[in-house]
Length: 325
Ligand code: LMR
Image 1 (spheres, rainbow, N blue to C red):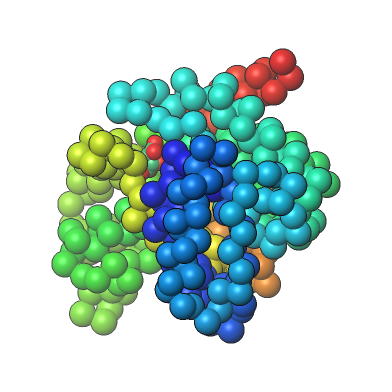
Image 2: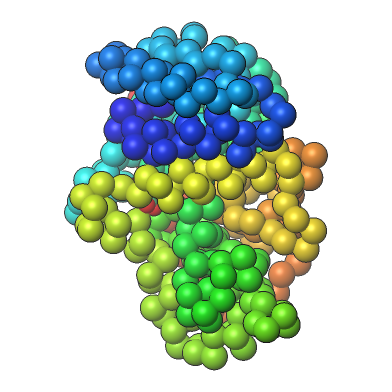
């Protein structure tokens, strides 16, 4: 689970244990993996989970051993990583995180079910996810994903607030690329329900310069803004996004809607280099995602999609050099 992102996990467990993610009739066994110094704290979390008296929660297993933590998993949410502190560049973290995600991938390979669905949250999430996937070669690449739903929710909410509508009146925003400040929040295909009519986001917002300027930078820099204000990373909103991501992976996306998810780029039709975990718009059915193809991409979007891809290529190449050391 990871002590450093403990607050995300702490915010997440209650929602999972009460059935918000895997369904109201799915019994849950929670396995909480952390580093040894955190075990006494985990005992407190176990007590609290017991004290919630949640009918679906059948067992809680706290552990510091990967052979226990990854055994027979159906879903793995990898929250822990070496954390970024205020002012620190995400790339600085790459080396330490390659070591962590190599170990976690190898443990998935050895102990988890081959059908396990893996969600990587710890930053740099896309590249950590790629390293975990490469370290678990017998688990399909399609079973690995990283979290960009938090960025997706941020984009949705910014547009909704601007239009004075509820968040669910905005659909089909897209986060392309890296969960970093180069990500591209794209509303060219988004629709907003205004007075029961669905209109393109650009028509609803009526402020192109905001949508092409401050909107994008607000979403790109939101994680850093939260860290600056809280002196801690996003926790509540990250936990909510994890639940949204996993619930959609289990139960599917709504007809006519896509969601953003960092997935393996192999075979994509948008000209993104193949061997990356890149955030795309996806549909999900029967627990399988497919990239939503065929969206027209203008020059403005193309440049931003390519810039975030270039950052990911660089991260990947650096990470792979650490992996082979
Ligand atoms: C966020 O988007 O809130 C976090 O990923 C920021 C961070 O680096 O922890």
